[in-house]
Image 1 (cartoon, rainbow, N blue to C red):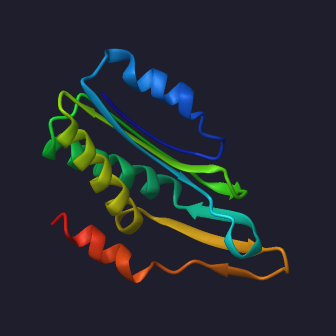
Image 2 (spheres, rainbow, N blue to C red; image 1 turned 45 degrees about the horizontal axis):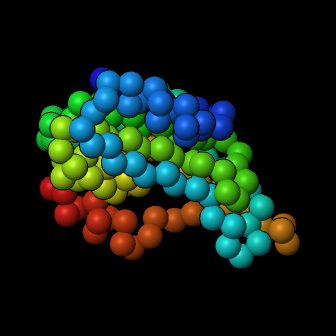
Length: 146
């Protein structure tokens, strides 16, 4: 089972884990990404292309499922306005054995940063706002999966 979602609403991690693991898989690896509040950040806004972002996430999920023996995969990304501490991304990868679940989870979060159309804007307490540029290490982490 592959589930992919792009949504403006909060991610209910406990509910998603219950739904994901209803099949009683052998191992589930997870990644929960949250908005950092460094430097007096007050808002992170994620913009996206509705059709292309969802399609890109779906393609990425299927690449992971084709590469590893996955029993279930959940990939959810929020868009819109978020505050420090809000969950921005959830990755759940399940397989009969932990190595495949862990590898798939790491692959998905590494490639999500470079392969999916999402744009981040930060707003700070002093009124500054800036679009976030990709980090130098993001592409290196993604390329190691080629």
